[in-house]
Length: 154
Image (cartoon, rainbow, N blue to C red; front, side):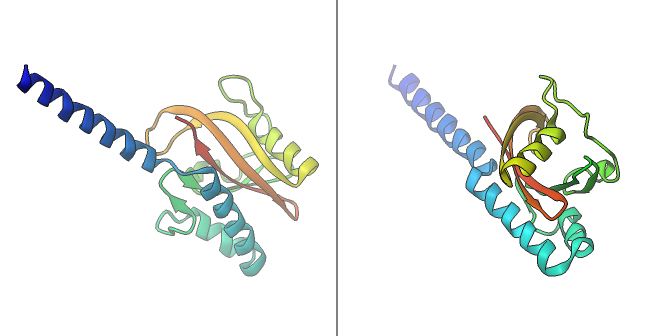
């Protein structure tokens, strides 16, 4: 009995430690907002071309942190920069919907135009887990662009 309880205690410790590690792999809402603000500042300071190249470079840790990366759309719904999927760049994704029917890009643009910044909930593939998960994207309008990043929810 004593040996069994000892094993259960070790298992509980392992589960707790693993749970903490998983939580640490996920960025926080504050970190997503900070990354978007850093991206907006990069666009204003360095211009779009240089900033978009920085957003696309996975080695650039300013714009790639665990499951955080930057995405940018113009007001027509065309992706102009994507830190996780370069195949999206140049594509108009205004009508793209998630599994629940949320018009993701259209909603980004609506929030940016109506409030200047805000959060949008949708489902999206997590680059760390590779699973489609609930995500909240934080977007800000800068000139004629919507700049965003998002957090995955457990």
